[in-house]
Image 1: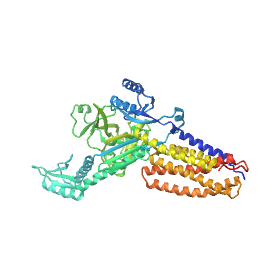
Image 2: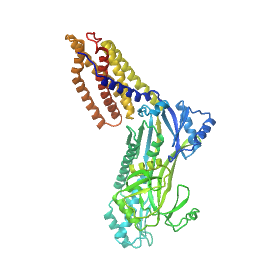
Image 3: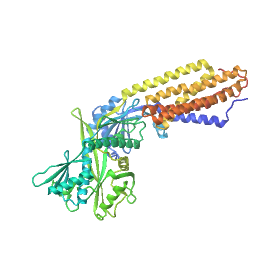
Image 4: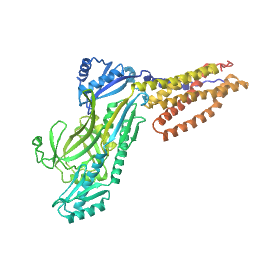
Length: 619
């Protein structure tokens, strides 16, 4: 009996190992500390930006290791993290608010390898570092927004009940004020409103000939609004993170009004900050065509109108009344407008929003409507050596169009600067509106020192465990032990390759899973080699012993690995964060170890002993 694989099987095993080595190779070169510069709206950077940044850094005697210019960003590589941090602070100060300057870690692999496509695996927040945000939800704004919704509902209720009122307005911080001409109408309104809206508390406040009601949310409703705002924002942030494709994110509540967001292994920190930190929505308003916008610039804004600016800076007057907000949007997709081939966002409304929009646009055919993009930003700037946080609200008209027909469930928004901006706007709208504004009160890039220390300690543990296993196998099983050691080395390469191909995130628990896999991988070979020894002791020939060792040990190895794989799947299904990281590497290690321990070692043993009868086995 000869133990030989057919040629195709040997070539298949060799091909798999070569592919694994190719995809694992980028991890050998490490990463460079880098600073990424891009325009705040994702537009293409200017061609002269590279020279401009070079002049700024040269004046401060800071040297960049390399500079790479892409379509929407410019990346500067540095030798160490200290130089990287100095350059980032300097560029933020010199470039101003039109540019986004963010820290990054750029793969240091050669260009020829980068052009072939492989990418290194991500390292988790505890290894490589990443982005850490602590966000605070504006609970006062959440309550005000709830009261604002009740303000419109109360107006509708008064009209439907034919109760004449003088005014109904929202008083920021003090509830809703309802004013009537008589006490009788006021009392009727209070009775009707209390019946329809039990979440509101009403209080009579007469003043002269004016009969008033003051409406506030009751304490239970206030607490419910705050709880909903926090949970809704957590859900929305999770949706946005999912859109970014971040592996193993941490998004959790901290206290009564704060949210922690950790994004390990993020490559593009600029995009993460813009998407996670942005509070964006849309408002649809009719254009005030009866007054001159340029005259309103002097401060004489006509009643019932509000002054905005378009993208090009031109002033425009819009009606104060909002026809529709982004709260009714259920889906948003980016694309290109067919007639002009310009970037656009295609909007889908829910049934209520479609009904409202249809009713309000049916009498506005032939008139102009403006789409207002509103974004709340919080920027951190260094002023006189101190970090100062500044809130900024960007409200600009991104599109003005004449309503040609009654608008309903689906329509499109054009007038965007770039396809990147269209994609980001669609992402924000699709992920859902934030129930209340959020502010990033703490932002950290976890990283270079602590992360590198964890990396060194984690990989040292893998190396020590690996070397001890190598020594034991070589001493105890001799030649066959060396074959098992070769398979063990290839198993580690395969694990790294699969993590790189999946762009998965490796964390400290993941390294623990790899260390466990090292022991489990060699365990399969121990079972096989002990079976071969037993066959030799029974007087079987070397060829028959090799064949019986692999065949009879297969079912035992399969049973042991399948049960462990089931445990890994359960850990992944029910665990979160670090537990999932451990489960992923354990599952990958089980699959790759089955391949290297059963097929890889068998192929090598066949090449050494398979064609020679009677040769003594070094086992």
